[in-house]
Image 1: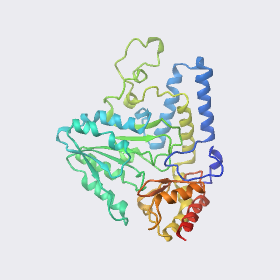
Image 2: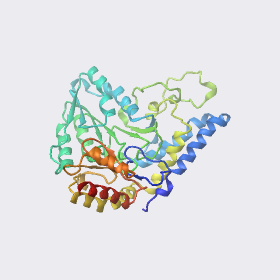
Image 3: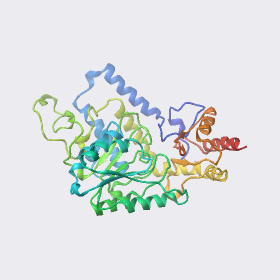
Length: 389
């Protein structure tokens, strides 16, 4: 794959290595969003019952292709990861044998959404939080952290909430192994795949998670305030966060809406967020996922590897450290700077040179995508060399 920057509406003169925070938008996606905005603003008379369902169904089918999901009706359109996690929290009490469970498992330094989401339900069900700490050593950290997670899952575990890629450190967790262990003890496995889906392979058939929750505005290259979630069989008869009329059977029959329907649309459709048939965001997300599928996530991952490999060798030579390739992706790099280099100061120095990354306190996060080149990474190396002189 060659550099795809020409397809993005990214401001010229900026070296943007911060896709894990907010992705720039494809030019075609912006056009789709503008069309949707004008339809609602100028041509509301063209909105018909199918306008509420057909675009959403197309997006669900595309997301199902991306994650190797057989049934696209298991995909719900959500407003944010917090919404998807609220669905999980709302249904945890339904877990078989929940009265014998003592805790849920989280990963250290997890994104706040995944911590706050379960505080109330854990109090209600008398469950404690069990956080699996990251290993003190940087050597083989990914392997050791994965081993710790597996060892902490017991018969007393109700649920494991785990990312595919850690949002700060870039550590990759072995989801298939964690899922297998969860099934052995009767625990749910909930995956926040926000920092991986769209940039690397994710196979629901292989992993067999109970839920996969993903924001749309990062690696899916979509707009803010929309996301997607897969919900497995455990959630089929579950309790939604809200009772949207759009999620009931026959809701496309506008002439008979006051014949109130108690039955939900099948599988995960009860979990669609209210007003999920968004006329602006949905066409944008549809366009971006189509483009990702056209590129192929393996090609995206390989592009990120090809543009980072040599610059990363140079950074390691300058005293930086990061996870070995075996336990990380190539699109999200949690880099520890050499002794004496302050994360905030270095991030500001990069900003002064129009190079954008994230300072996440304990590490800097560098997150390239298909709009980046190897030269973008060398620009970062050059600034560090200056700081070390």
